[in-house]
Image 1 (cartoon, one colour):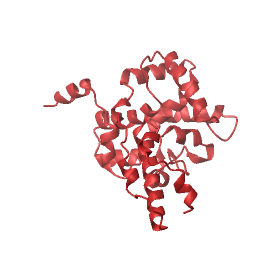
Image 2 (cartoon, rainbow, N blue to C red; image 1 turned 90 degrees about the vertical axis):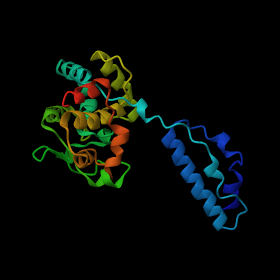
Image 3 (cartoon, helix red, strand yellow; image 1 turned 180 degrees about the horizontal axis):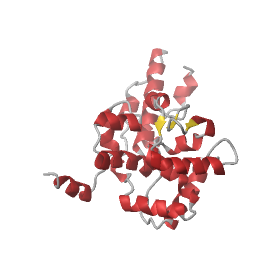
Image 4 (cartoon, one colour; image 1 turned 180 degrees about the vertical axis):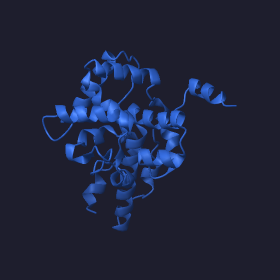
Amino acid sequence: MPAYIISIIPLNISEHIVERRYHPAHNIRTVLNGIFKKAVADDKEINPYLPSMITLPKMEESDVQPFTEEEQLKMWYSYEEGNTDLAAPLIMIYTGMMPGEVLKLTKDMIDLEAKEIVKDVGLKTKERKKRSVLLPDDIIPVVEDAMARAKTDRLFPMTRKQLYKIYYPALERAGITRHLTPYSCRHTTATAVVLRGNVAPQVLQRIMRWKDTRMADRYVTPDQSDARKALKVI
């Protein structure tokens, strides 16, 4: 590795990590670990363990809350009254798709007869990339409407920033006052399947396209009312 690359990396590296979210900061530290180890392999005099001393911000996965059943009903009522900007979040809720995946969605990826999204829609992990997305019956009319409205092959021809710009006002028009991010949709999928569907962990793993079932600890977020419902079976 060229010496100048190492020279621009400050020794007081922990003070220069400006990313305050856990996962991006973790990725930065991983990259720096690789750079420093490569530098040592190239006979550079540098401490390869320095990036490991970086203190990561607190991981606050619990901050992402799912939509409640009542909020989902509000979304449906609003959508049926013409609030079509709710199409993308509804599709994400009913399929477990990520915002980047729904923005990538094109008409030729969708097999309505098989009720699947079958082509290259997955992002980030090998498991998501190789698995098809399942389309439940309730969301198919929304998918069909989005396909009919789309003026290009992409169902939602916009950037992530543009999606966020219409997402929050659409929720407000539906009467949803909580600040629920687009990732709340995917958390809703996992939470609803577990709490309302009572399915095996392996089934949830397939729906969410996870590598293993341990991801449920991050995504399934029961509240007090869910706990009370569960107690009724005793």
